[in-house]
Length: 223
Image (tube, rainbow, N blue to C red):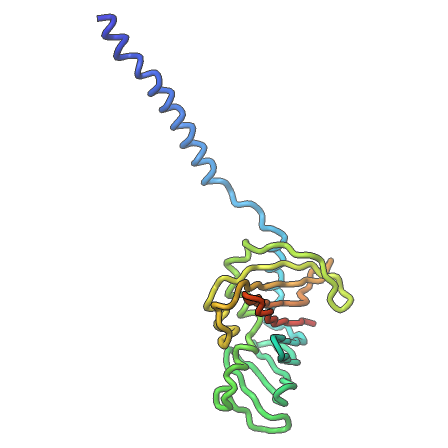
């Protein structure tokens, strides 16, 4: 009887050890999964400050938008007015423009008649004159993935930069409907804030094309 007892008892020892290890592992996993989230990175904070600056409902600021690609340059010179209204000039087209919400209106300089971009068959300008607030809002949930960039000089002002890879095809199609996304190797969004006050100075969208296809940049300058 004693031998039978020993034979049945001995296998229980490794089982107890294994059971204890499993409990410790489970406790460790629970501890890992219930950790409090860490503080946001500096890169994330820069993007959040840029967004907060644009969200000020009554804020007005001068705005220049420049787009440069292979063999062309497009520019908008104007300002953002309170109430989600963008007004200014498109020098290359000799047109005045204003954006209300998502609708773009255009007219020849000196004319009194405003027409939609669609009526003038200039729908391509709608993707160029995109509200920068709308653009940042679309990427807000991904700010935590931003990377801190270098310090740069913009017009004599030292600025800290942060970058975010753009992976949402819908956003890229909205901004660049005529670009073949299959040819895009990398797309990034960058912000630059003046130090030490951290005021928003620049927003940059850059597309790098595969196979030595060069790059396309759209830059928003805030003042």
